[in-house]
Structure formats: C-alpha cells, structure tokens
Image (tube, rainbow, N blue to C red; front, side):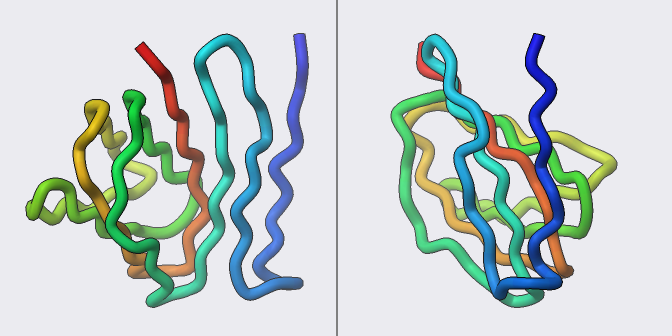
Amino acid sequence: MELIDTPYYLNETHKHIEKVLSFNDTNVVNMQLQIGQTVAEHEVDADVLIIVKRGKVIFTVEGREVEVSQHNLLHMAPGERHSLRAEEVSDFMVLQIKR
C-alpha cells in the first residue's frame, strides 16, 4: 500500500503539473490550473482518464468540447487529439494507462 499526498499548490504558484506515481504501464499526474489556463492540443499513446477533484475543465477532444467536473469522468482512447482550458480554478488527476 502507498498513500500519496496531492497537496493544493495554487496558493503558492501559478500552475502545477506533477507526476505523482508511475507503475507498470500507468502514469498518474496531478494538474492544478488557474482560471483560463490552457494546455495545447496533443495526443497520448495511452488510454487517458480525467478525474476532477476541484473546479471545471473544458476538454476539446477531436474537435468536440466536453465539460469535466467532480460530477463526471472523461475517458480518451490512445491517439485522440485533445486540448484543455480551465473554466474555474481546477485540481484534477490524469491517469495514462498504456494498453
């Protein structure tokens, strides 16, 4: 068992992106963004799960916009091009799982 802290950093910094765990074919990344911050379009050679702990993030996946919040979960297949924009101050987990 391993309990991993994911503290809130946005009171101290403008943006926070940190890989917090890597095992087998999985990476777990904590992202914390201020309102309006973006991540440019890219793709990942892995399944991607987005789990929002706080805030609201708009993902554009293959040209389609979806809102991700604490009330839902986003799955993207390997190779799906996507970008994102924080609609609110946001703290979320990104799980990258290679097949």
